[in-house]
Image: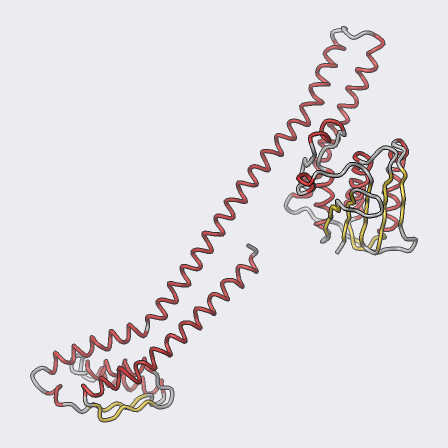
Length: 379
């Protein structure tokens, strides 16, 4: 749960509890005024009970306690406190009790008894506040436990994702290393025929480049996610950047005999971006289209306002894979063995776009005859 959402959740619950406390307190006050105190008045023989100014039920009960405790406290203490209450509450209460019960033999016992009664009533008046505090405590405790459980689940998911990432890294590095070790050993031992030496050397070079590409992508992915990394953003022309990115991979499209359709406006489309990083994100999408597009097929590169689209008519992406396509090393098993991708290109592109405040989307139901389209939305 986001901090803002949690804050409003707790504020809402707090306001609900405060309203419940207020309503409960008012109901208790009405009950005391119209039921309890008239009944006590009949027993105690009230001559006058008047509430004025800022008077409230709590002050009334405190003054009644002081009245009953007057003979039990040090001389003058009750009157001194009564005077303080009057000053603070603006002549809150005027109480005059006329009963011969307190001058007789049982006066002290009756005073203690009524002190106990008013202490009980006072405690009962405070019950809504205690219940509200307990209620809010339980709400906060339950929410904290829920957040801890969510954090635990996130941590477990992170651990699983990290272990899978390490497994994929080990898999992708081990395969070319195995080839390099085997071929280089064969060459060093002189067991390779002369006409095949160049084939072995070419394979070693290809696998070395594959490892270099993987390490480079991995370095970029980790660097973008590291704490303290910031983009160097300036006002740049997206149209010009997209044309330059297409030019860099144009020969790759030519090699696969792909029909490249470029729909980029002539007028500038100005955005505040890190030119190097955004160029890397666009380049990764174009390389992905070359690698996974259909040989002899079509690729569309389009810019509309601040939306960049790279679409192709290659194989459809499996729905299960589509849900995790922007996660590191997200590739199908077939792509892993036949296409030679690192599985980090789209993850890096998505991370770069997110750092710019935009989002990278996959459309598996692209129009115009294309099977899939990646879109960078800058806002």
